[in-house]
Image (cartoon, rainbow, N blue to C red; front, side, top):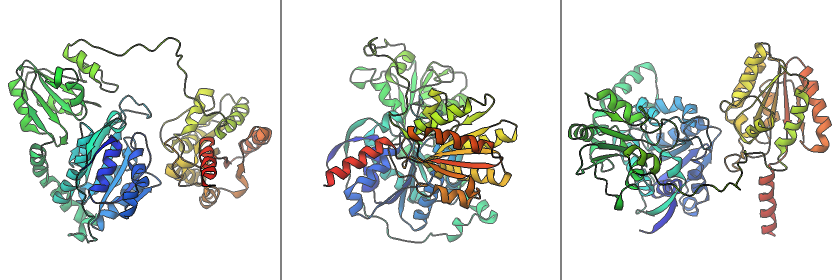
Length: 530
């Protein structure tokens, strides 16, 4: 088959097409976004009738994929690591019901290049007791999609694939396999398995436990995990996923003198790890993420030293790289040239002409009158308003409205919430419903720029429907306002905001203007079509 230069994300996407996938349901989140986008843009996927959807959030996306699996077909759901928190409920239950044909791809973000935390998705897979795959390179990422569906359909289990930022966004040559046909529609072998009444759930949970031995055997024999012997047994090395590459980069022709256990599939290959422990004087664990494997080995250790992130042989925080591995091995550390002093650090800022900027100018002017008041922010481009002093908090998707509610009920006045149209559709609506039910004294600004801008310009699920949604949730229509955020409307915006702060109840202001970057795209497309 042909060889292609693929990003890790693209390798996974092409493998999904080639492996007979029928539907990919996702929520955009860097560094996972390009997987679904690739399928959306693929003419080959379109010719095969493959569905590719952006869903309201990660929970609805995974539930849609479980519905695809119910029909007997293969599905994929992609998200970034914090999205796993959103879909935790269907994720855990998908493991219990024995879902076949579902691959869940999670892109973790060590060093928090575009995220709030460094959480490691392997803990979720371990908690759910399902097989996990962690490719060390783009070719493995491609091959593992086929392998993942094989495992899923053979054992009746969803499979979690974990990739870090560096693998998702770097390129390498990938050789494609012959394509598989999509599965025909078929009903579940055990219809009761999709009905999690306690009587069924207890039986199915026992079945999941009974599958663990088979999962371990497959992990030991699949070929993705392997023991690589070495001549120097003073140290044994355990690598997980991309860490294997970082190790080999430190030795000529990739020849490491120490015995290595390369882990790319879980459950852990304990036979290989036991051999390494028995044959070597001490162990170094290399993981791009949290010390998931190291914790388990440390708990089993009987006297020998195990080094890694727990003892900060490698700093516990931050992305792993070849330089950090060299330092842990006691090798000379080489790095690239220093950044010239003429290059000045510049904090990220809103684009020139961004509609959010005009909204924040009004918020800042009004809030000068209320030094004890607070503005609760959310996840999106508008988070950059913090650098200009417009917002006080950013915690997680959808938290702005509910945090403002809690603060208002505790006596903070005024309590403003700032949320984008995409995030409102993701997880803001339920918070607004809470505000209505409790008659909270809050002002909610839903910044509608007609797109999910921060993740690359995907369609916003709540776009053009925000006012109707707010009315449906019970907000008084007299206190729902739409305004165009422009400099010429600044005085009107300030006056409107002041009026709604004075209202004792739930107010919603919708500053509505298209993202400037997206508008330029539309104008360019319109020009090209002529």
